[in-house]
Amino acid sequence: MKLLHLLCLLPFMAACGSGHSGSEGLLSVNLREEMNHPSMLHLQDEIESVEYIPLETTADPASLLDGVSEYAVTSKFIYVSPVKEQRIVLFDRKGHFIKTLIPFGQGPGEFSNILVGMQADEKNNRLYLFCGNLISVYTLDGEFIHNLNNDYQVVFQRMVDDDRLASVAFPYVPFQSGSYGLGIFTTKGDTVAIKNDFSSPLVPREKAGFTISIAVTYAEQQKSLLFKTGCNDTIFRISGDKITPACVLNLQNSDKEVIRSLDATDFSSLRNKFGEDGDILVSDLFETPQNYYFRCRYNGGNYVASVNKETGKVLTEKCEQPGDVWKLSDANLLFGMLGTRSYGHFPIWGRMEGNDLVQLITSYELGLYKEKADISVPHELKDINEDSNPVFIIYKLRKS
Image (tube, rainbow, N blue to C red; front, side):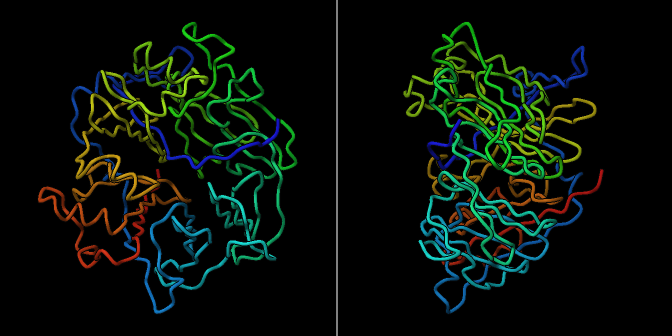
């Protein structure tokens, strides 16, 4: 299986309900039951401290960012790819601008394909740029090492172990036409494991594949990907050697939602709104040592939910939305502005980088928040104006 295409994926995932473990010990919860009785999550119980890092602007035009399309964070540096410029910009962990680390172009050490993912491996001194039909590998100091050619179709991919790549196949390619669903591959392109048995009697097997109703995140502590497709209630974990169920959400969605999440020959789902008419769309997720966190759309509203990994206890919360959801996705291509207000009453959502929960906020988003009297903006962000670079918020989590 060869990598033929590439897509900039806006993360799609989130949600869960009052839970119990299944007969074989797999965590199974009823999200729908709890979705109808929202309260507040307990993310504050997992946060030990918080750090606000505005990315500085200097007289050097290279320091100016029009937004952030991808990033990676280490203990020393923040690597950023702007929205409209194909380059990697380096800041230190205090937000001080250093330089354009990796330019876009055809010259030595430059990269020339569309960037869809970035991953920093501090332990092995590696920076991976996932772009086009290859992976460009650099040191964390920006020294080019080599390109890895992985010619199978992929929409999301990360290194999860030495010589192991976990990946999610490109949408709208039926599995029987050569796609694979979920896969684990070596850096040489050899197949370790694949899963393409996402099926339903509602969709003929020759049409079955992924549509845009998918969600995936990299779980660095667990060295794996977490994945969900709208046609299946199971969250799958893709590690270095196997693909296994991690949690079942029991969404009880309609046949219509299952069909448009599985029929890879029907492109109308690109135009339709998900999470309407009583169906629950999981749009994003991350996991901490204690909980799974999900973001979802339901009955025209946006919600977040948490599932305790040990007890199965589920909490759901309705998000405060300070603007049209489509405009918000334009403002921040990574996460938008929908999260839990359980810590400081400021909406929190992000992704795990090492042991930290990392949130990215643009000046446009902050401007919308400041206009909402019922949303508390931290005083550390009061001076951010419309000309400011984005801000990283690093939540240090308590050890379980």
